[in-house]
Amino acid sequence: MALTKEQIAQRIAKELKNGYYVNLGIGIPTLVANYIPKGMDVVLQSENGLLGMGPFPTEAEVDPDLINAGKQTITALPGTAFFDSAYSFGMIRSQRIDLTVLGAMEVSESGDIANWKIPGKLIKGMGGAMDLVASARNIIVTMMQTNPKGESKLLSQCSLPLTGKKCIQRVLTDLGFYDIKDGAFHLLEIAPGVTVDEVKAKTLGKLVISPALKTIEV
Image (cartoon, rainbow, N blue to C red):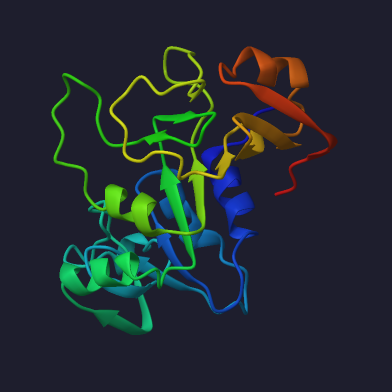
């Protein structure tokens, strides 16, 4: 069966390394904060001006003044630093962030990403997405493989306004983990119980099945 959002976050947490500075985008990526391995020293950054975010708060811990860039309430670990967004974007633009995890509405086989606007819908703005995809050297996109209409979000070309071009190298969906290279989605890991035929049916971009394909472990 397909991965849940929580399982996607758990798999992404395995990509973390000791000493990493990590930016978690809005949506599924924020859940990664709940699954950082015990004993691992990882510092979470939010572009609204925090360095040192903790997991989501319990009901008793909620502080309405303590939020991430997605306006979700968060916790702050001992030693958390607070600063203005100019410093925060300076960290991003100077490539001080080791890993960026972003949500997306569409990703193309050439590594283009659309994650900020659906024409005709009211939005607040692009936020930090454009800076992140332009500056980050290590980006993983997390999303469901299809939209609410059942249409693939892994495409030959994005149909929505782009956030960045040829900047995404890895995508984890509820169906599989992919490398993007040579103009194709290379399926490296597949969700437990999901078949290759199902992945093929829900991928509109060029798809290559790795000869060493393995099952995702969460």
